[in-house]
Length: 163
Image (cartoon, rainbow, N blue to C red; front, side, top):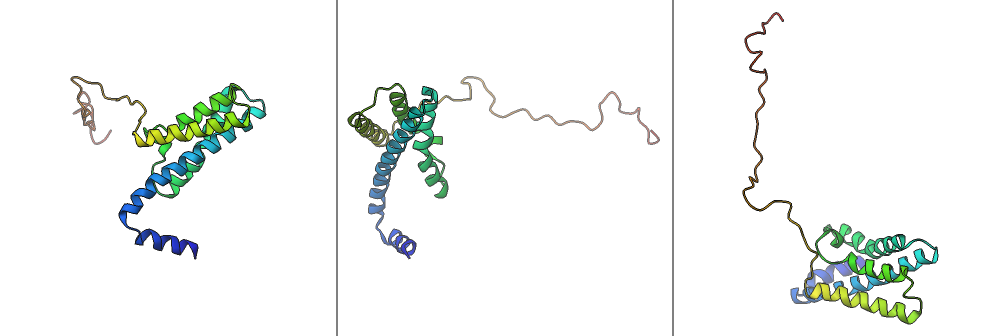
């Protein structure tokens, strides 16, 4: 029943409100990214894992919910686009893995910083640097098409039907 009401509201809402919801969705996504990245990093750090594992745990737990959301919505996950997304989870994991954040106040400050920087990256449309795979200059973008012959020219005329 709740799903039917939600679908009905989504179709009834004016487009202006849906645009506002997209900004709100980014805020809740940033909150989830920060909370789960910090939780994953704390778990790995408490188990005594090296800093690389703490960073990986922060990233994997931080981006997991967003990836599932995007896949269920039929979209390409944010982490696979050029948007700055997992970088904020990596920085939180690095700070926790280095042991810089041990008190509740410092963890809360880290949480606020990750949310703030994620929202800044959404608002200002910060992107990761991209490298083009095509060289500039005289490059032929179309590959040359070579049609193979069925019989090599050297052997033409030497084969008979009886062979």
